[in-house]
Image (cartoon, rainbow, N blue to C red):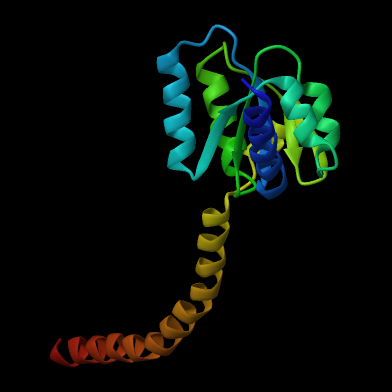
Length: 171
């Protein structure tokens, strides 16, 4: 890799570190190509991505970026999983680490906050953006359905009472 290619990689990594909601750093030593492709596919499905880069270039790219202290995690064969959604990459990484013991999460960064293994697991357990939107919509929709039920309830009660009166008169 010549100097121009290295500069391009550093620039790309710098953009990843700046624009991503979360970056997860993991060891991938011993993983097969098929396993890595599976991880990439799972990450792509949630709008994230996986990137392997030389640690030295990644450390250079981290200089002056929000998660600069994440550079201490860069030892050995490391891979970056990242997404704009602050939860997606952590969720996929955590789930993948549970089913593949060769994928070991070291930590990561969420903005300026550097995360350890436990921090990545905690982020993975948070609801995703879509789940939050769905729960907000449910909360907004619930009062409307309660109002509709309350308005409709007296009519159904009156109909029930009238039916009971008719049955009594017939008997």
